[in-house]
Image 1: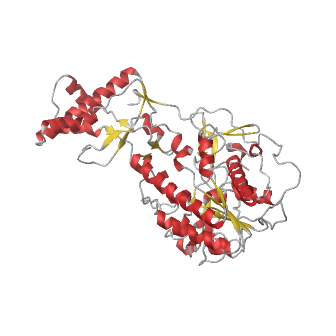
Image 2: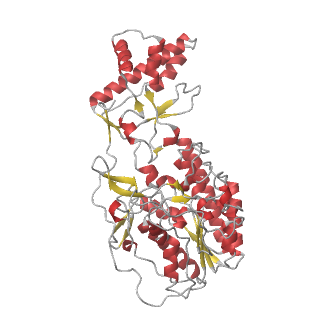
Image 3: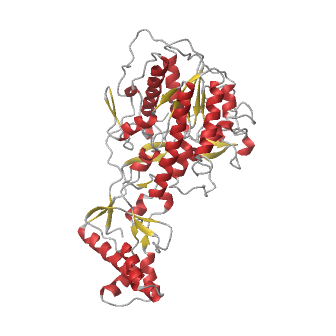
Length: 521
């Protein structure tokens, strides 16, 4: 198939700057006010987005550029504050150790591959040194736990190291939990914060989405970005957990900011590989069109032989006579076998999405279309000359169809499940912000702007384009330092509007983007 199907190039990369573009801060020296709130003791609750996770790992530079740390620095310009502390890892490798054995991979960096082109690759320049058995002493203002879902924040023993091997505890929280039996919320409340932020719920949907909507993880592997089950959290469970967190934090007397959830399907993890990247020349398009006519004919003949009414058989077969054209074409995907789709495949629709982790080499070899082998070509030759293939030969043709597996695609039903859950979660977040007089942060609207034209700043434009857009790191999910600066500014703006404060924003151009391999220190 490699002689027939040409796949659009994955990346056309120019020079990627790792240095800040501007040195001038947007805030001018002057008088700032905390308004009607108190920033002196700030605590941030959340997941990997709060922790500063980026490039597929938690590493030192990422934590230093987390949005809570950026916000804490701005709060300090407004009033005297306590030192904002974070459970820092020990290096920029990004991997994590458990009793000396590496359990999570190192971060990704932009490096030149074997083909001579730059692409995201696992960093191998140093070994990780952060071992979760070395428990830190807190308390910590940044309570972001990579992989945490809403209900994990209220779960006791989520930081009990004995639960790590069986998946009941989170290795990241193990590092800084005040005791094995505590919860993230309990440790946050114990700090008696004057102000808090809450950005949680992404993983309640994201883990399902990044698994292609497969559901419960069957790999048995720990995944820090989607720790635990991949199922979407029931909206009622989310509402209960989220309300518990908010009520407990407000109960300390703290003011705060609640951040809603962006459309997870707008991030580069789902928008980088187009579903119409099956690019064909005219001859190849004609060959594939002829192949699927043969598939339709073989199916119809087989169904009729098994006693199905010819009209019904021909009607069912028609869906498999897919037509291809010169230029971009949409890939085929696997779907559940049913009475209306007995062969279990169809062409993708315009809105359906491929995941960033799909095997691009396999796409170039026929994954998502047809895996042509010499044996299959021989059967096609029989059909072209008017011959009748044997049942075994006919099965070879049907078996050559190579639809993209569910784990690599989000189909219509999965996208609907995601959007329905997200809408419910966001309604809960907004209602609780309004009921408690808290700042409501519309991150959904900001990310939509990033994904549709970008957000301008003094010196450039921040977009969601993978690698070159500046907003997202090399895992296609988490922001770069520049992206986290935008998150910080978005939250600060909502805080200022709610509490009549004048916390200065930061210049997002002063923060870096993706990292080249030789720039890791």
